[in-house]
Amino acid sequence: VELAPDTGTDLFQRFILAYLTGNGDLHLENLSLLGGKNGCRLAPVYDPAPMRAWARHDLVSAIGYDAQSYPDEASVFMELGGTLGLSRAEIDAVVEQALETTRDYAERVADCAVINDGQRQRLVTIAKATRAALKSSPS
Image (tube, rainbow, N blue to C red; front, side, top):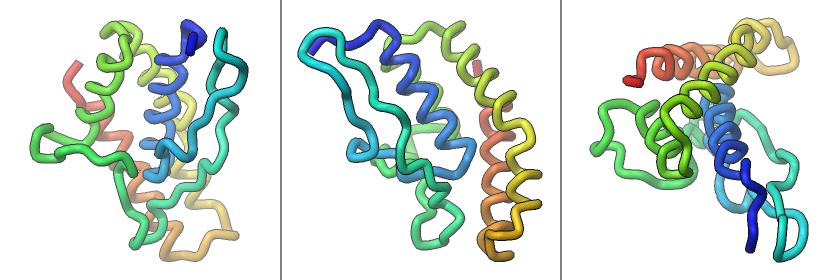
């Protein structure tokens, strides 16, 4: 299959945004390709629910990794960028854009009255912690 040239960047961006928004459920069944053998691309995002708000679904990533091999959970995602073929500058640009995009995410979750108090507080805590982890992750 011939993938669009920016597929690695798009995939990395999705994982970073999922991490920052508490969606630890981004796995291969929540990713798909559109198009034929030549020039296919990632389908639009679907199932972006912040599953970490529920204790029983609190996974950093539904795709397994050896947590003991990394100094912190953010490092897993930083390494993923390199594995997808991104340069250090491209990884940093995606992370900076994602941090800017989600700048007020924790506050918006805190103000969302349709989420019950326990889940809302849990998600706010996770959102703040993941932002801090990505900001302090080694470049």
